[in-house]
Length: 270
Image (cartoon, rainbow, N blue to C red; front, top):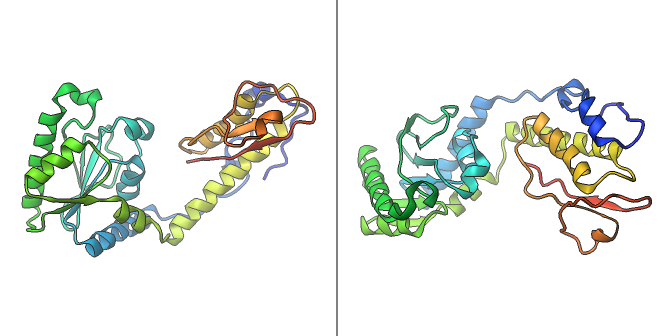
């Protein structure tokens, strides 16, 4: 933590006078071998796939795709309008489809098929048929006779199309969640740094908190700190003050914090 202080609650001025947000000014980042981390994660996924006897996973979750190949482009968009997807085989080239950038450890990048109404409109059933054809072609390409495919949450039409091609479709959630359970030393170092960023933001919130500051202004300090340190997003804006503390799980509003108010929050940082 730094010794930086502000004279009085002034979130706007605090941001304008930013000489505090980058945690690297006050604390050295851990030495993380990202190539080793990527290799470990691929190994964990393949071990889980082997245990479930699947030939490939079809991944669409931005969290899972990042875990598998360190692809982290438009994750919030991807979370509710899936565009990018990953063919992750037990053996064979890891293939990313419909990528917005080439910043990943995938072996190759290809065009793809529409997965959402945003891109496919009313032609999603036809797109699902083509997607299933691509999947069968990929299995043939990697030379496997195994027709068991693990699929993340996706349109039912795609599952139906895969089943019509004679493939066995299972839920990929058990595989990917199980793979992530055991952390490597590099992953633990990443978690520790993320916690340090959260603590840094919390300390800055405490410095700006006081009568006259709104809940969302206070929350914005934490959000700003997260972004300034290459963080992603917050799963919610869980911050409440005064009479809004109970019941819990209320998100921040423009309520002005008053003298003597209790303020509670949860970081929910990604």
